[in-house]
Image 1 (tube, rainbow, N blue to C red):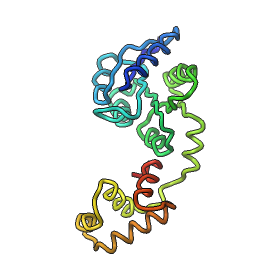
Image 2: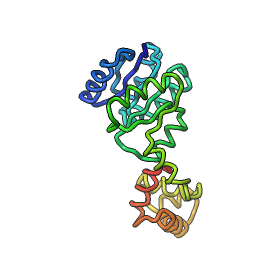
Image 3: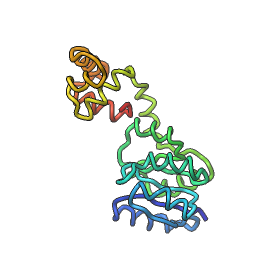
Image 4: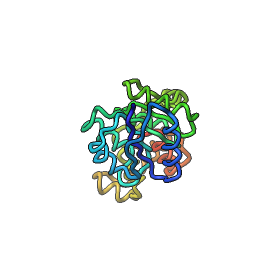
Length: 201
């Protein structure tokens, strides 16, 4: 019997997943949580074989919780569920040593098979997402350009960024212009969106 911890903040979705998994004779949900910061303590208490974790959770995001599990309870494998198939999120998931990454709109039988595969140490990645991640390529921005864009994404104006990074306002504006050009973005806001979706911020 494969013991499962389920982390999903939407009650209806969580209930549907529990019901779906209950149809499988070799799978049992031993614990449910609705917050990311409850995953590790609950896993330590119940010792599940697999944790099915939604990416977007209150308290602590799913990928950070998966990284905690990998460090403190390596016997528990993780399967990340997401409704957003972003290549950058997949890269972050792999860096957090997750066992699987599945889109929520995958066929129901795919979930049960993914849990079984992850439980025995196989890595399960949605094939379309894997291809998108390969097509997406590496971050074209330098560390300094990324830093400037990250501060802009947090709402800092050019003058604030210049003060924080000990640069002139003109240099900051040049960095932002270069970033927009490199990312083929329409403007700064679009550049932030592109960088976030690609997992570069």
